[in-house]
Image 1: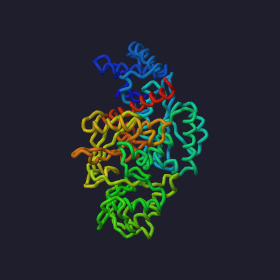
Image 2: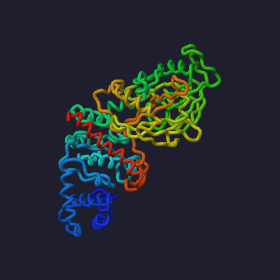
Image 3: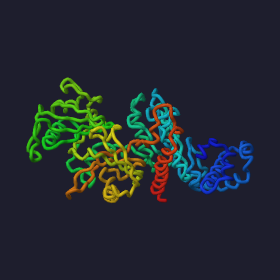
Image 4: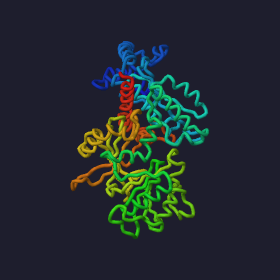
Length: 494
């Protein structure tokens, strides 16, 4: 990299020598980087730093300064590596911010952060906006300084919220999450954009979104949701008597509380509704976070789902406490019931989306003989949009389902998430030998950028990300910056 934020990396003289002896892209990058360093250096420091290159620097400084003031940075500059926040443009069309939160008392402020207290992907996301010629700051939210935060964000046109689910309830003042959500909704009411808004996170990120999309081509018609114990007992006993099922809790993101369910020692009924399971019928269960298997009665499983590992629930190996309906629907207490698709063993197909743009397709193949492609138990293969492996899936989802998605989820008045994923499970199509795909989950709550987040949680920072991973991940964050500005222009009729 030629420039690391506003720091000197190789030194101005080194860049100048490269400019004189280099050729092609190297010379162009050196020239632009030199000029960019020049215009971001205080006047009193320029004499010593730029003694060897006053003419070249001043010529290019004029060019870069105009670019900074009027639009996107030149490619030779934007393609440089930046481990710190880039200088803000002088005359941005829009002002945005990335919102972070540090969990009180947690190392680094949370396992998603580095020793500088930032999510490792926050700086590249903000820089992706800055590269478009628009302003983007990183702003911390403090539960003890809510009013100050509310006042400060008045100047922004949009907010990119990068707070992991649940963090605003960890060691914070009572009601912090509710106050923050209310504030974000107030920004939306003022005509600003928020990614992702509380409404979108609730209706798109919750598991019962799978019920809302069951009429789309990417949905399963026999998908239902339970919000209390009576609904669970009635629906589950009927469904599980007919075919293997998947029971998914709403909370969690690594497969915890997602159970594959088979009848044990009893045949399935021939037609749906012909039979109901009894409390003492036996089940084989596999939890998808680690693929461990347990055997319980129907009564024990329902008890665990409703009340946790009580004496009535028997002995459980799961490291998570059940109680999936706790708090009711308003608090996110719910279970979704779908048929088990046996071809899940072939892996899941993830579409990585930036707004309505597909950035990448990722095939996640379970390892170790399990059926789960979550919780780190999978091998990844990456595909670019348009790859023939998933051309039909891509076309159907982007052209047929996506235009109907916001209506199905009842979020028509909200922007699509800036960064979100849709995980698809393969199933046999109507034509022999064909494959269809259905959504197993949406994720729109602070989706991590894996090649940046791979170094989080310890002593490493963005500077420790290998170059090849840095530039690969920046393709995503730069697209996020461009898409954020496109969505702002559309929202403002520009």
